[in-house]
Amino acid sequence: MRKDEGRIRSERSDKKIRVNSSFNKKVHEKLDRLAMACGITKTRLAAYLVELCLHNETIVNFVQDQYKESSRFRIIPSKIDGELKFIFAEKKLKISRQPTL
Image (cartoon, rainbow, N blue to C red; front, side, top):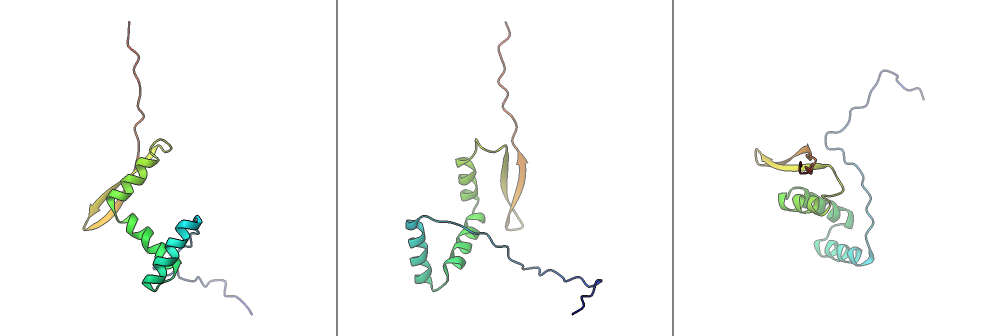
């Protein structure tokens, strides 16, 4: 078959991106049981839980506080038109001043 060189496939607006996760046995078992109780797949439940966390300002700040020393950047969650948006900011460096003699 011959490919059309000028033809470009359009990308879907709702395209999903695959992210793989590894869980310890206890977390996997809990995820499996909750997914079974909800009647959905583990993958769909995990994606739903991640979305819930990313739409919760308190959880976003909590996670950043756990890793605050390892990054010079911070996300500032802000509600704009009823939707949680992320503002990306660089942290200011703390400069310790030496006392002058």
